[in-house]
Image (cartoon, rainbow, N blue to C red; front, side, top):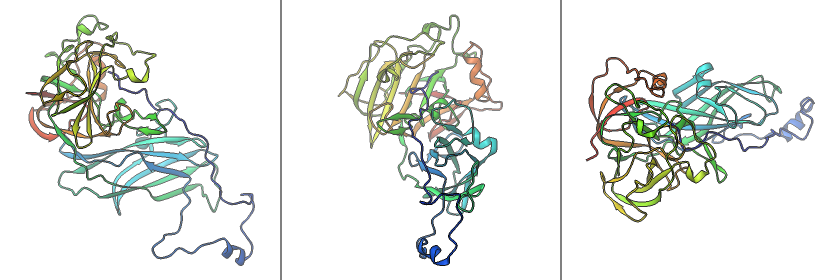
Length: 414
């Protein structure tokens, strides 16, 4: 299963922290008058400035979404840039609502959620001089707890080249990258598929390929796939294919009907791209072919639905067609940036599959059959083996929630 978008790319130049005109190795002014001449006094409403060698900004404001774990998730990304000429190593990062600490990542846990732009996908907490990285955040709120209105972040980092007293060896940056939590409500939709055992194999909110896909387009980073789902269907024996792995026809769900998730017009269609060889990742695709054959639908209130990797020649709709929820629009295929037949589905803020902000969505109703045991449980599927399920799962009805990665579901698209 492959995401749309091939990962992170660094397109940033070096940044220099300018502290003064004088050589930074010189000592501070010796006269009190000199000190007064270069200082300002904060007022009661203006806190004193803090030196922040790690520059931080939120890629997009989080939109809370209820999920199958009975919680609400605020999934978003923090972009960090080292403004110094030496390495900066983060030791902790906290998300706060006022004085309440909602999430703290430190050590190996922080490294798990952090990657430098343009480098390998190796976990790290160190940014080199002028380097930028992303920390993927998943703030989980109990269902009964109030949703915070504002978030801020505290960063603690060790500097390879400190410059005391301005830059001590360990710096703490308080209340950086403040963000207002969005009041937007996730769009409520019908499922795009029908039948049992549909696996959410790649979505929010773990460090999946979809979540880590950051697209550098038109001068900005876009996380179009923040909540994207890759759907494959488990057979009764828990496998996804039998026989020749390279043939899309070896996957029993290949060609399954794809249903419109809501009422609304079609705004874009691409068809006619060939099926890819399953089991290998395609190379040399132009940007406009990453979604393969696809349909984009306007489902209202600034939400656009993408149905991607559709079977060649199967699309039955055209731009301008008005769709109704449950209507068959195409068949599941293996076109574009894909290494196994699947449906890639996501909701986004614009009609562009990549140059968009990924938005959360919830399904009106479905049956949660169970969950795979772990992210490692996906590996056997790609070799024709059954995926181990988490023990003790009992099917249950779900309403108005979003699935999480590894969920297995039965859908009624009618």
